[in-house]
Every structure is written in structure tokens, then in C-alpha cells.
Image (cartoon, rainbow, N blue to C red):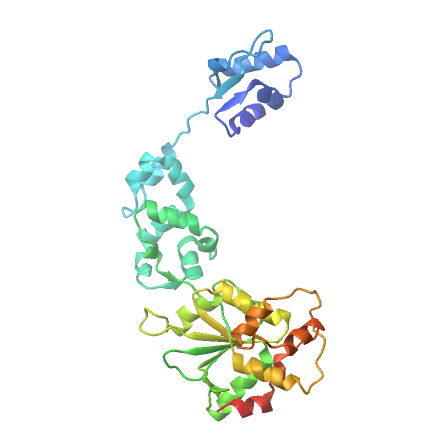
Length: 348
């Protein structure tokens, strides 16, 4: 029986006599020959006569076709007939193997349609809907491709499940809503909180001559997650083009070190549909303030550099040498150099 299972597990429709002998682990050729002949007589194997015999006595053919037993789909067909009529019952009756592949997904949808169809009239988050339909909150995340296949086969729109995606949660401070919105992404928590505190206390929101509507705490690498800012913009701001408003403008402000520069570019690459620029005025201010301060050694001494020429060009400082020099020395300018007193002076 174990040998038979191994034969049926063969990925190809045919199997060679050598492969059969490896499966049977039978060194005695006569015994091996007898076993193959029994499988031929029982209809499990059928010789491929065009492959010719192996030249041994008694002979075997070089190849055999594997005749897998037909599965009894009676129970599955009964289950298909009990599906909700909104589903493609006739399609599954014709292709029971596809029903078996779709079983968990389509049965969950069918139960939902039979008993709680009204819940589809109002949206839920992706995980909420996933749990509501299948009792597994991550099923849509894990099996999204299969769910889409099931919906397509059953002629259901992709929006049929009526769920919304939730954006990556960021700490944000909204000063004032306008169109378009300008969002300042700040790499470090203290600097984010300082600007937030000042804007709340003064009611002002023009930072170094630029009106800022939202302060967003980037939380290091969290901001570089693919599509995180795009999701935030679409879901939390609702001011993208095609939705009744102009697209938000995103400014980035972080440490002046290799990691800070790489964070900016990784964030931009992860959100290609957004307009994301370094906040040139604040970076220029950091360079000015650094002229009179002893700078610390960077905590990141891995020697991994970033696209400095492009970054300086975006700042409008293509010939800036002081930053090149301090980075070469392994030093950096933390954004906390723009402290409360400094920030208060540039907030208008």
C-alpha cells in the first residue's frame, strides 16, 4: 500500500522502470518484475509500448503510464448543490476539482449569503470582514489571491465583500485642514513633539516660511514600509486628486547622517505616487547651527552610505562640502539641534 501511494504521488503521468525500482527498493529483479506485472494486471500501470522494453529477462517496458483511480465526487457534488444560488453552482458541478480547491472560501461566502447577507450592506475593515465571513481574521491577508479567484469564478465583483483597508497608524497632529494639505514627516519623536507643542501653544503653522497642516511622526523604519504613506494619504487625508481635492504634499525632515538620508529615499521609493521632498529650509538650518557645535560620532558605523549627491541636489545645495566632510569623518547632525527655542523663532 505504501508503495502504491508513492507511485500515485509521482508528479508526472508516466514513470520509468528505474524510478519504479527505486520506489519498490527491490534488488531481486524477478521479484520486482512480478510486482510491476501485478500493478499492470490491477490497472494501476499501463505500459507505454513506444518506450520499448528494457532488454532484460523477463522484460519490462522502459516506461509505464500511471492510472490514478477516479475520485468519488458524490459528496462534493451534494455540497455544491447546497451553495447559495448567487454562486456559480453549475460551474462547480462541471468542475468538482475546483470546488475542492475553493472549498473553505466558497463555503464561507455561501453561509454568509444564506444567513447574514445584510452585513454586506455596510463596510467593515479587512480583518473584521475576514473574521465575520470565515472566523479567521487573517484569512484575507493570507489567501487574498485565492479569494479573488473564487470571486471571479462566481462572477462576483472584487468589491463584493465590502471591506476597507486600514492604513499604517502614525502619530499625527493636524493643525488645520486645507486644500492641498502639506504634511511634514519628522523622523524623531522629540522633534515631532516640540513642533506639535509650539503649534498648539501659538496657533501658528508656518515653519521656515512653509505652511504645514499635519505633523507626522515617522518612527524610524516604520515610515519606509511599502505604501504606508500612500495608504495614509488616501485614507486619512482624503485629499488626493480624483477625490474632490488636490494631492497632499509631503516634506521629510530627519537626521543628517547616512541612515537619515537613506530613510528619506526608502520612504520615497516605498510611496512612488506621492510628492515627497526633503524639507530644504530645515536641513539648511541644521547645517548653519552645526557650524558652532561640536558634533557627535554617528551611532551607525557600518559604513553603508546613501545617494548624497542627489540628496544635496534636492536641497538646492549641490556644492555643499561641509556635510560631505562630516559624514566622511563618521559624524552626524541630529535633528534635535533644532530645539524648542530654535523652532519657536522659525514658527510664524
